[in-house]
Length: 334
Image (cartoon, rainbow, N blue to C red; front, side):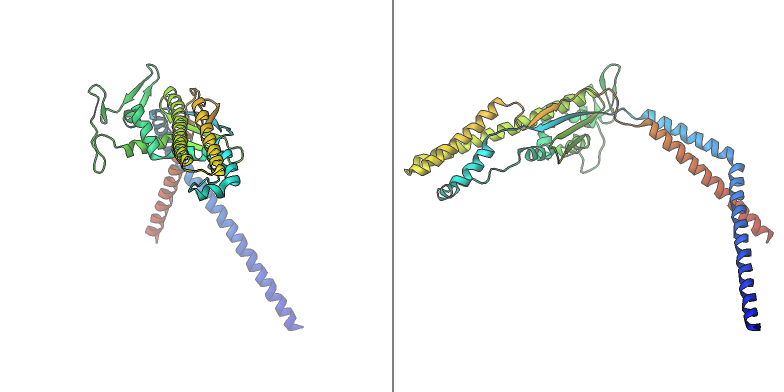
């Protein structure tokens, strides 16, 4: 009995100690929270002033940034019952005979839309586009746009608009006159291409300081891409016709002649389609328009972030100063 009573007394003593420890921690938490609030209240003017300064700085920064406008166009793959389907069918019917004659019909399954998008992203096409339309100065030297007079504003340290010469001071490997690689990178930064995997729809956007210029460049870009793909297919089809005609003259087999005639017919269809189709690969569903609202910068977000960052920075500064001073005072008392 005595041992059981002793055990109960020990358990009660343990519970009492745990209860006291819990109350002590709660009391310390309350004291720490009150002290934290007190420290913030003591430095409230510092917090207010610093937050205001950060907000003013963020407003000034937001207003100093030039407007950037984004023009977009929605495109669909141009449907065509031309060489691809025809060659695929012929490959199944006469693939064996054609291979004996040294001709590879293939499957005809090339996705022209995917090919066109890869061409659009390629350095060669973009460099040709920049060169043909003389866009180097607009890409590198223009820093903003005068909406009132509708004209570009150039960075004088980069380009002398009166003398029409580059004046920028650059270090190796860059040159005074921007290289084709540099202009390609500059254009790639303002170009965006996306394709919906479910519908196949393609969205292309171009961003620039002028909404009109953004729309003009985008329209011209799609036009030149379709033209390039059209001429490329037409040229390849003509080369195929020349080759097949030569092969036709060399064979006396009726079956092989039939294969060549049908192949030539399919290539003729490709040329005819290329001649009559302006939108050869990508067909415009929603054309590019001049955007009314700028895409960047988001000035409201910049100001809000400035205010939040200023508030957090000022609160941390006040707390660090408060507890540093308290620690120094405790050290002196000790």
